[in-house]
Length: 260
Length: 260
Image 1: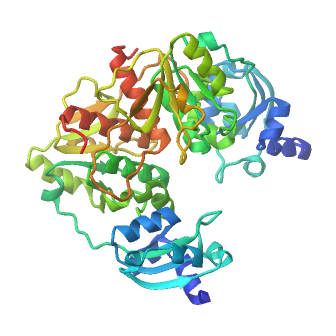
Image 2: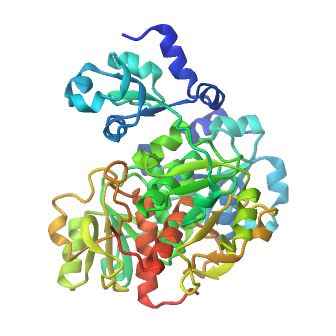
Image 3: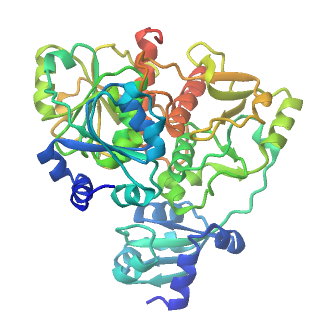
C-alpha cells in the first residue's frame, strides 16, 4: 500500500524539473529493475507487487533503502507505461562530473541537440554494445532520465556515462590535444574508406537539422554512411539511432579490437 | 471543409481491419505527402490546409483524385499526430503479389513477428538506404500501413516492397534453390569474419523472443553482431532496428558494391 503523497511524488518525477531538484529518477519493468538491483546500484525505493518481491533473492535487495509492496492498480497509477510490469524503482542520479581528459582518452560520442527520447535511448544502447563508455550531450538534448529514454536504453545506462555540457568547451579541449572530431553528415566522406581512429569524438547531430552551424568549424573529419539507392524520393537520411549503430560498428571494426 | 462522414471514415483507417477492407492507408506530414506526390503515386484524397495546397506546383497534384482544404482544427481532428502538420493523404494500398523467384534473386529481408511499429519503420528505412528492395514479413508482424510504421519509415516505403507471407513457404523455396538464409541470433558467428553473400535472405526475429523455433531449422548460416563489452548487466541485445542497420551495412560492404 502506497500513500497518496508518495504516489504523487513518484508521478512528479516524470518532470525534468522535479528530477533535477530531487536528483532522483525512475526505472520501470521487471527486467530493468532486476538489472539495476544486480548491478548493486543504490536504490532509494523499490515499489513492486508482492509476487515480484518474493521472487527476488535476498542479496539483490541489500542496496535498497526502502521497499513498498503495491497492487497492480496502484502500480498502474504511478506508472508511465500503458501496461505496467510488476516493479518500479526510484534511483538517485549518480554524482558524476565530466572529466574531459578522461573522456578524451578513448572513443567517445558527442550529441548535438538530439531531441527524441527513443533516439537517445537507442544511442546509449548502441554505445554500450560497442563498448563506448562516454556520451557527452549538448545542454539542449533530451534528458537522459526521461522515462522514455530509460525504456529505450534498457539496462545500457548501467554501462555508459552520459554527461551534459557545452560541446564547444569539449571540442576546444579536443582541438588543443589534437584529438579528432568526426562529424557525421551527408556531405562527409564514406566510412567505407575513411581512416577511423580508436580515439576521438564521434559527433551526431539533431534529427532534422543535423549538426549546428556553430559546431561545424570544430569538425576535423566529415564522415557519412554510404547510401545505396538512386531513388530521388523517400531516402534522404538514416535515423540518428541507426546511424549511430552503423558508425560505432565501423569504428570498432576498423580499430582491430576484438570483441571481449 | 470536410464532412463529418468523411472525417469519421479517415479516422476509421487507423484500424487495420478497415484498411484491409478498404485497401487504403493514410500518410501524414508535409514532407511525406510531398514525397508521395512527387513519386507520382496515385492519391485518392489529399487533405490539406490552403497554404500547403497553394504552395504545391501544379504537376504534383496531377495524380490526385480529390482535394479537400481544411482548417488546422479540422486536420487535428483526423490526425494521428499530437501536433499535425499541414497535410494528410489517403493512398490506395498497392496491388503487389509476392513473386518468390523475383525476391530471391538478390538480397532480401525476412521479419519474424516484429511487433513494434517503430522497429518495422526503421527497418524499412534502413533497407531503402542500403538498396534492399524487398521485405517479407511473417503474417503476425505489425501492419506496414499502421500510421506509426509510416511515420518511422518516412518516405522509404516508396522504395521498398513489403509483403506478408508464411515464412516457411518462402524458406522452402529458398532451400530448393540453395539460397542461403542468414539468421541473426546471439549465438551466431560474428559478421566481422563471416562470409556474406550478395544474394540470400537476412532473417530478423521478434523483439524479445528472437527467431521462432519453427524457423530455426531453415537457417543455413547463423550470424551476429560482435559485442564489445564484458558487462554482465544491461547489454543483452541490440534493438532489432539497430541490428538491421548494422547487418545491412556489413552485407553491402562485403558485397563490394559501390554506392550509386
